[in-house]
Length: 154
Image (cartoon, rainbow, N blue to C red; front, top):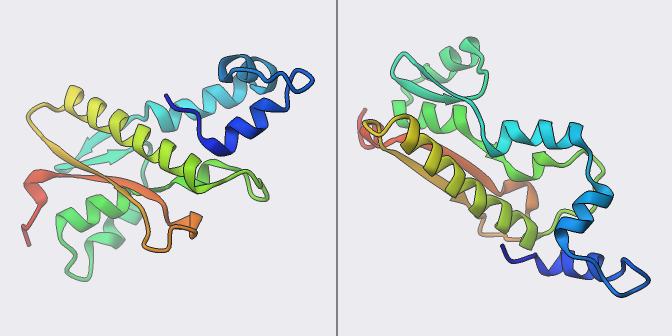
């Protein structure tokens, strides 16, 4: 993994300016409770429910609400499964940056593709990492997925 440029500067300040590698930094700054929490994002649970593949624990009420108004199965599945990358931080966290969100989004895309294919090889999925036109709008970087069988189906 390439360390994002914005993190290299932070890592360089450690050790009286001699710097520190990212794994050592995790050992200094990390917490097991955060690592456990991040497993829900980096190796999420998926559920097959009524022909939908859904991320994590989901709300049946939300699913029913999204199914209304003539939405396609693809749009419902996409909406139910979307995740704003910036939501991984706590509110007020100031170190979000485009380079970090790009790295996280691309890694999550690979992870989701691998796990979905592993769990349901007979249900191929499209995994999308959305980068907004306004690349500075950090809240709009998103990942989502849907089954290919739902594409172009009304």
